[in-house]
Amino acid sequence: MPSLPNHSTARRILSDVFGYASFRPGQEEVIANILEGTSVLTVMPTGSGKSLCFQIPALVKVGLTVVVSPLVALMEDQVAALKLEGVAAETINSSRNRETNVETWRSVASGATRLLYISPERLMTERMLAALQQLDIVQIAIDEAHCISRWGPSFRPDYESLTRLRELFPGVPLSAFTATADEATRQEISMKLFQGQGRTFVTGFDRPNISLAVETRHDWKHQLIDFVRARPGESGIVYCLSRKNTEAAAELLVKNGFRALPYHAGLDSAQRAANQNIFMNEPGVVMTATIAFGMGIDKPDVRYVFHANLPANMEAYYQELGRAGRDGAPAEAFMLYGLDDIRQRRIFIEEADGGDEDHKRREHKRLDALIAYCEAPQCRRRAMLSYFGEDTDACGNCDICLDPPVLEDGAVHAKNALGAIEQTGQRFGAVHVIDVLLGADTEKIRSLGHQRLPAYGLGSEESKDTWRSIIRQLVAAGYLRLDIAGHGGLNLTLNGRSLLEDGGEFRFRRDAARLKTKSKRAPAAARATVDLSEADAGLLAALKELRMEFARQRGVPAYVIFSDRSLIDMAETKPADDIAFAEVFGVGAAKLRDFATPFLARIAEFREA
Image 1: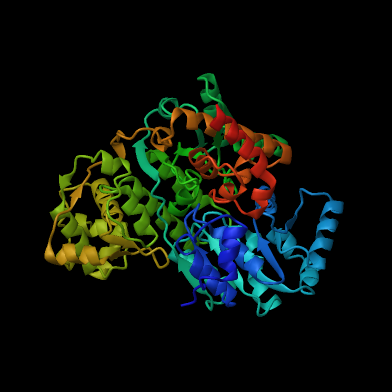
Image 2: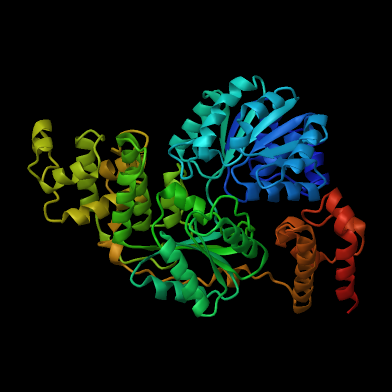
């Protein structure tokens, strides 16, 4: 297994350029494989440092790394951040005038640029491809790689054209990165980009700093106001299903004294850009949005993501809640859930353009997994991570762990359901299994002879709705698995087989969709408070003010100058000279050169006070 020597160039760049003392989990192995020329697909949780995995190889190798990115704003922010680190990075995109793009290309062609950020649409033009084929390309990195998969939450047709890169640039390693991809999506990305020849690294999906909660919707406006009112001064995102509700949510929050802005595709582009800029750069702003507000939102101090409606599927939900807590401090993911959501989502799937029956079937099963998460009788995080193929203990940081619901003994129900699934061959979905349990007289049951099975009619004392809920809870608890990549059949897991054959406890929540959970958690901001003295807290506020001055001058988000973690480190350690300042988290050579003097001066003011 490739690894990096202790005195490797990659380790030196990590420290000298980016100001980090060590790699985060997973980074070293991915970087080592890229440096060896292996194509890789890397799945890492948001905030785990995916970008460094292709940026460091770009600086180790002599030549050009092309980075494919889906959004202009994201490219601009990442290039600005790299330039502040002293890295020769550029972008060619539609927001820049022709003269600027031409000048950038001259820098790329001369070899002065090490990383070029570009959209798939511009990259895959014949003119750009022909020009790049004349250069020394050492790596092509594809960010937000789930966009290439038709089963991902953000499929973009233009990403499919990237499947030609392997033949257009033979011998050039391809690296693909995403935070959101279940097994079926990972397999599709790998086949499309590498024909399955590359390596896949999955470092985990857990974001333990984000607390999880679901509440039954009964009056979404009151529920939203109660939630936001308990979190004054926090930055948050409120996702709504429609443009109309997005506007209504913003108006409601403003009326109640909060600074809130809407974002949806119905607004003109200038207004959307202005609202996004305010949200990214100013504290305490709440953005109410449709999913048009999504990828590339790299604001690190979003303290909550509030879903007023059920998202499209588990992958979409994971991606959307991942916009909270990117700084690693406590954050919250809170969802309102109602039966009308399920109906609306089913309609969306059926009416989607271009979706064949196979696609619709898969999307229904993905939605089933999210509904199972909403109805989970045990730890919500376990239900989420199980969907992505991970096992974990109860997290202690979700509504169910903190305020367990009243459960009924369902051991007999579970064995009956598991038995029916096994006896029918583990290839049918919930509808047929429930018909068997209820003793229904259907043509399908008669043609298959399933009326002769031992499980036939064993569950006739319960309603169809109760059995739906029990099966979803068995999925959520890890006893059953939905075969999303296949025909949507229910499969027994090892735990499910053990429960069926050896017995054990299974408790379920009856009529889960109508229960209202109450959280015992404090708001994330209260739990995220750094343990600083009053004087140090004053210094931290002054450092944030200075950071904002530099951000405005340079036209970049504040976190690009320094992360909150870097400022907290400064407030705690109070460096007095360049040598000490260089030891601050996230301070590399370029930031030491450009920012040490003003920040040391501000720190000195507080030291002398």
